[in-house]
Image 1 (cartoon, rainbow, N blue to C red):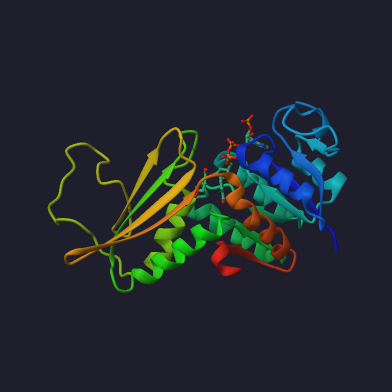
Image 2 (spheres, protein in one colour):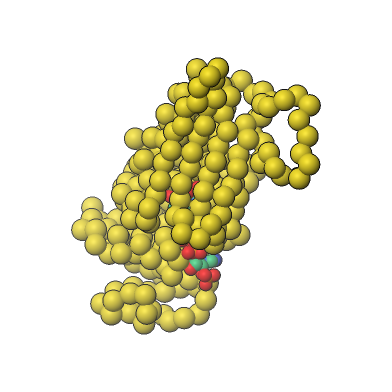
Length: 265
Ligand SMILES: NC(=O)C1=CN([C@@H]2O[C@H](COP(=O)(O)OP(=O)(O)OC[C@H]3O[C@@H](n4cnc5c(N)ncnc54)[C@H](OP(=O)(O)O)[C@@H]3O)[C@@H](O)[C@H]2O)C=CC1
Ligand SMILES: O=C(O)C1=N[C@H](C(=O)O)C[C@H](O)C1
């Protein structure tokens, strides 16, 4: 069966890579893309793509769904756009594969409930890279034995959300194996606000944003006289594409929302 796929954010760093990935896949058809700027009605006119990429461009999601009837919609846009996109997709029984990060807990719960009520499969994957998923799983395992942990996530300086979706997901997985507790000295006090980073159940999370970086994370576990570091690096966006393909393949068989690629491996 050929899966009909649409992609939002085709000019973006991830969207561009995803367009090429789906165009090359023999079991997928790219039926449309969603942009939010009026650039052209077909990808053939986009300078980012070869002239033979004959794919319709829409700026209105409902029109895209009505005209092109995608089975799966991959969102690689911004934290501001993704929540509304996801709700609209679920309301129209189109299966979302969401790579965009920045959902609040409340938004995540709402779209999870909507997917369940509609019986529509959906995947929200804060990180599509297999190595990052393993890093999160290993970190959750290590926390059983070394519960004092801090997360340092490092990204390019164009990233809109902090902490990263991966950082948040890592903390949530660790929290399943680590009783919540405050770390550091009970009387510690910040002389410069934010010095100790964000706080998730007493775990500290630090966000670095620098030119030259792509996507990186270290999880540090401290113990008596020792430290364990679990690190993952994505050096390019191709590192995410096997995960994007896997999600497109898997979501067609789901009837509820799955949050995190670790649940599909
Ligand atoms: N899950 C994962 O493994 C990964 C997730 N990400 C996440 O994916 C998202 C995109 O990342 P990245 O590609 O680096 O970001 P970019 O800023 O490079 O791309 C985002 C694109 O989305 C476009 N856009 C913004 N709003 C809309 C909208 N309403 N409809 C359609 N297109 C829109 C932007 O256009 P314009 O610039 O003109 O505003 C831009 O082209 C981020 O949330 C990031 O955190 C990134 C890497 C991996
Ligand atoms: O914005 C990015 O680049 C990335 N975003 C995701 C996140 O917030 O975790 C995934 C990856 O880290 C790259």
